Length: 415
Image (cartoon, rainbow, N blue to C red; front, side, top):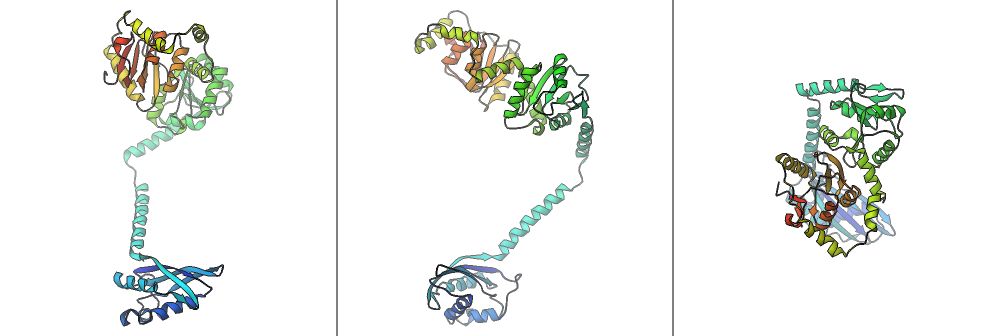
């Protein structure tokens, strides 16, 4: 009997077989040829189709378990779609194989050409990718690669601890402390050269000495390890500012824009100590004294101060520069659920999650000029802000009107 070459088969009929008994492969093949003989006429006789090479060798795979036989039947075909479908349907008339009841079901008819076409497409994508990866770089890419190599060569070992550092540690008044060598390389790549690494979680003596004579910014990863390093630096070194990579990211993997944004948003180390104390449940003495005073019912406590203050002074006016700065900060906070706390020079004292804003504001008895946050201004927040003499509250929306408080209420629509 003839056999179709794999390259000439156009379709493959896939069938499953279930037999109520134990049979062998020859029994199944014999039943296929025997029970379909004369069924479809001379043009579609399986034996003749196989002799002429229009039907390939029928492959039967069976497995016997628990007195029952199950398996698959594969028939390659070079007939057209209609004829192949007829041959497949003819398989399902077989109800007995030997002395056993049987059931054959055609699961699918595979178009071999579609499979080959998919292979061609996937292989073409792979070849195109390899071609583009190996294409001659343009002049800008060459310049970038050379500049990067030069910056990598600028890394040096500094101090008795031989810490990885940039070339301008001694010349700079300000330095940036990171965790490891890879962080130094990333900052050098983006032209920040006054950077030095701790090379671990313990603070080296070199870092302690530098903190006494230079303005030091700690730039750590946005994970729990970064928080632990901040705590240790605050204990043993004189850190001036602290900033972190975005949550879940490391300094070595962030982009130039993310680096500069993090450095712009750095906060004073003292503010971080206050935040850590608030998270640990510690309350400043001034807050305890406030809590010791008799309290009025909540509804009165929230309403009366707001109405009382309206007669004292009108809300302060915004300058054009302040309005511009508030708008930029509010747009920067959209979607973050965060808050900026500003002093009277519009410097950012700290950035805190909105959920911790009330606690942080209560812990600062004075020095807050404005609060910008991604959220809604309510009476409770206004009351807390009035107690610490905040001048402006800037948010997305408000539930309090300007005529109900002496604080200047500003929303995104006002900006």
